[in-house]
Amino acid sequence: MPVIGIPVDLLLERVKTQPSRQELVEHLQHLGCDVEGYATMRRFACGRCGNLMEITETENPPVVCDRCGTDFKAAPDQLSAAGEKDVVRMELLAVRPDMFDPGGLARTLRNYFKETLETPSYPFTSSDYVVSVEEGLEQRPYIACAVVRNLKLDDDKIRVIMKLQENLHWALGRDRKRASIGVYDLDTLQGSQFRYTSVAPEELEFAPLGYAAEEKWTPARVLKEHTKGTAYARLIKDHPRYPILLDENKQVMALIPIINSESTKVSKNSTNFFIDVTGLEERIVHKTLNTIVTSMLELDPGASLETVIIKTGNVSRQTPDLTPQQAVLNPQTAASRIGIPLDRDGVVECLRRMGHEVSDRPDGNLDVKVPAYRNDILHEVDLIEDVAIAFGYHNIVPTLVPTLTVGSEQPLEVASHAARGALTGLGYLEVLTLILSNEAAQYDFLGRPREDKHVVIQLPISQDQTMVRVGLLPGLLDTLSVNTDHELPQRIFEIGNISLLDDSETGASEHRRLAAASIGPRVDFASMRAACEALLREFGYRLETKPSQDPAFLPGRGAEVWGLKGDQSVSLGLLGEVHPQWLEHYGLGHPAAAFELDFARLSGR
Image (cartoon, rainbow, N blue to C red; front, side):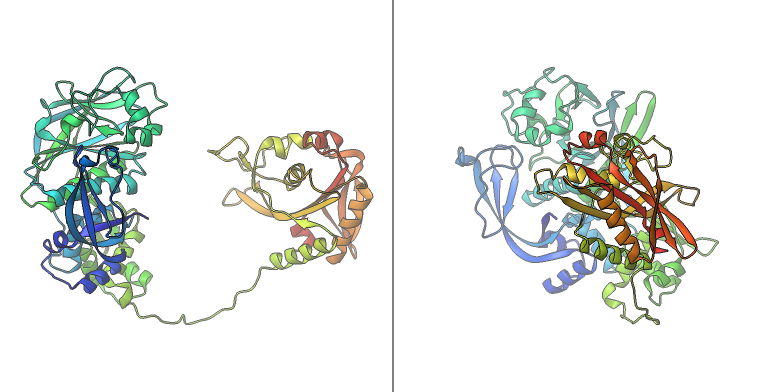
């Protein structure tokens, strides 16, 4: 996972408790963070776009700006040292993006240290800003926006906001696929009526971030030549029109989700900000916006939040929506699941230490209000995990379970091992083929009529994997077809499961099958019958065959396999020489024979 460096001074100045360095590492680990330790980071600034880059003391200075793509070897004057910073380095905890920056992490620590047990609140006012969304904007249909005012920046805060934006792209945005963020200097924007629309690849021109205002690029050129364009072109290049955000005077704010414009970039002198988040999933878009704006407010207590109206057709909504998520938790369930002696008050305190607001319900359960910036609470179990974290996994006393059992193999697996030994002794090699198949392979290529007993994949990844197999023979023939350059004869077998629809609770059930196939100049019905007979003998059966008209086999060379044991006769499967028509389909130039048996019946399991 990516590693982030949290500036120690920015973190500790936001909490009253002042733990030692070792204590801070321990507390972060108790919260689930994988801490690497402390380091002194060297900083370098890009003269073109103002981007701040950090490297460890042992790394070489950057050669390319990871924001605008400036080549510092070709333009060494664009790279300048920007001092050093002590940081605590830790891997990003993907489920807790609200802890990716000093402000958000300090907020978590204040509750965890019991400096306050109140849920953080963020007052807001309404603004005059309206974003009109073009209907049918398929590329990135959802957008949410906010305005943050009076946020005073310095090099540290600029670096924090840039890194937070980058890390949210990774954790919530899935590398900008699900969500992407734009942060703009509000004072560079014209008017209050913005448009989220789309343009053709060559429809307009603007100066992308890091380039002079007079250097105009079309969206198509950005995708082909700009560093961010080539990195993220895959997200929109297949669409005839590209999403774009414009202010009231049609000034380009950003080519979404690729790059902001140079004219709206944030600098150290910026104090008012417009933030947008666009994406494919509405929930992720809102969670991303909530995370970044609340973290910005945590960076500067003097900053204020304003909402923006998002208008789509005749429907208007206000963002950001910081309404807490409602959840219910049974305190007794939480304590028993974790296995700790916590009463109701103890569970309530643990939840409050994790930033939740808690109140009683008439039925004895707890009403839990989850902060709007928390993305990881989807189920009651997630709240129970928060209780365990606050209690401290290190405080749970390990105990042995009261009863001990010894595991053993299932009888069916024991029988499967015996069958493998028998077939291996007969000179057969075991293979494993794919469980997913398709109707043509399972039915058509063996001449069998298609049936409605197979399990269909609702959203198949390819046309070759549209169902769960109903037989093993197609997989064996396919295996032989890709080994035609090996010596003959070839003998292979497989023991595996198939799936068939039924009337059970799940609608389908698995059945264990055994199949073997052989190919070579001297392979015929008799040789395969001998192998099948030897296998049945291992399980106490005598072999009996009856004529079969199965189209997979040559007429007169196919048979039903029956097992005789005392007075009992059990139908076990099919045996025969594979029809030349199907051999030709698989590109097999020699005779082949096979059998497939119901292994559960054969083994009596």
